[in-house]
Image (cartoon, rainbow, N blue to C red; front, side, top):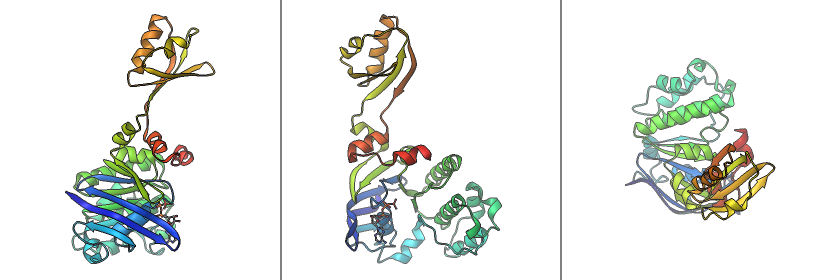
Length: 308
Ligand SMILES: Nc1ncnc2c1ncn2[C@@H]1O[C@H](COP(=O)(O)OP(=O)(O)OP(=O)(O)O)[C@@H](O)[C@H]1O
């Protein structure tokens, strides 16, 4: 039974079409990812779901509520962590958490949340003096403070270091395990792959694919890749004639072989027969990034991914 339904959503800003035609449904208890490059329309989509923006067209239902008509009701069941949190600079972390707790009839104990998010030593620090990552973590705490049934998290781990990012993923899984449905906006492939049960891939305001991360990878039918250095001279024809192999290329002394799921066994068998040892052997599976390239014709953000 879907907990969120979006059907034919459209939104433009002046001449700029931000969301062209977006439809998806989120099931209760899942971590649903909205993945796409900058400017794809992800934030606009979730802002419409949260009732913060009025769609130009389309229908949205969240726990049976119309987000625009039932904003007060929606606020009690949906927690949203926005990309740019605009909180008063002068309030301390503790004061901010107290203020947000007062908005809800049965708020979560924020001391547990700040402990989980590594903010326990910052309770007296003013918002304006927090680092980017600390502000990010506080905004996650604020999204969860009302014990929402649905949490919408936009660019959850942007600005966090790798360890804090992993800790945050763990926290989100725990929140989901407690029964909260999570909608996660991201442009990090690894985050999408590790955290999400299903993903809507959005490009230029449209959903180009909707599947599990593994399903998206399988759908592109990506090949296996093997790299190795042969210990003895190797005649490439021994490999190219194998039915499991689709290509053999050279990169200096390294051999790159692509092929189907059985290519590793086939290649290793030939090498053993020829008494050639494959050194520096690497087997590369297709990734979500490969799937994204196949779906959209370009990589989502190769530079940022390696820096992150
Ligand atoms: N308030 C606004 N006024 C005018 N144009 C906007 C506004 N908000 C977003 N846009 C434009 O609409 C398009 C979609 O933006 P949106 O923020 O929804 O995308 P996004 O996928 O979330 O990207 P990002 O990750 O960069 O936030 C972009 O071209 C953006 O420049």
